Length: 390
Image (cartoon, rainbow, N blue to C red; front, top):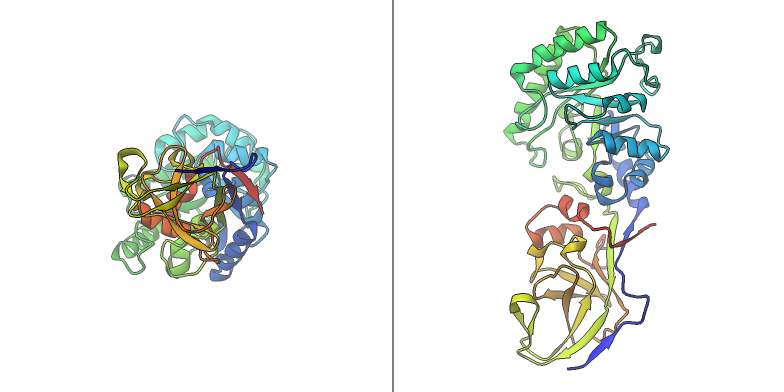
């Protein structure tokens, strides 16, 4: 058995984010709807860098941003991003005061949240929401701009229908008291990735009822949003006045109806190459044994870096324009590739996944190999992997 080693300085994996792809995808969505586009950059922009994705999307058709919690919103403000931001998943004891001072809009899924937001901001004076055409007179100085969140069929976040009328009336009282202003109503679709599923029709009906109830309580929300990536592409009835695009920005279409451009490429160098005899077992548990004499390449990338263990034995990587199988079990820090008789040398770079233009594996394929969805693959790449923006 002989082993060849890579030169020094060539032993780190690298992730490249293509901002041009994000720009192209954002423009695609802006052209597919007459509604405004919210760029959802939660989970560090689906693993692509929240600030970079936000700036690119805002320059190519998006006008608003969405995140999960207040901390994600404040991080964008710290990056100097001054666009409107909505945060829609917070504990009742979140720092709503800091959110208000930073001009962050807040989703309200319950009376408890409504009371906490009103109590946390009181008659405070946050930065006026100058981004909203037709926004309330800043001299009123409401304590927060909020989007009431209705559960439209996921039994997850959002107010249950039984609590909705009370929430709307309480929000209207808070408006009259000038402690907050309702600028939006939102919901989610449970089956948006399956166009035509009856659950989508049920959700649209419930959302329409929620809007009617809000208006009956005296609320006049400008932003009405139900559609995310898949529904924006397949369900015009769900568009209303705002569409939330998250996964689609980075090239993922859950509905698989539209060709978007993947924005992430993951590469790693071959750190060693060794010749092994037929019958040589590989990796923990010896889950693979070489059926014939072959060359094996070692990549410094494993499940601690985000590659799914469940893709062991099914995944491939690209080297020298050809695909090579991942053999044995993916380890915490490394994986082994069967090179066959390809004359690959240590230091050469393997493409783990990319847009697929040169025949390399894609994120969608890795998701299939791992039995998961693309969202999980792109959001789990670890901090040890170097990052580059192109």
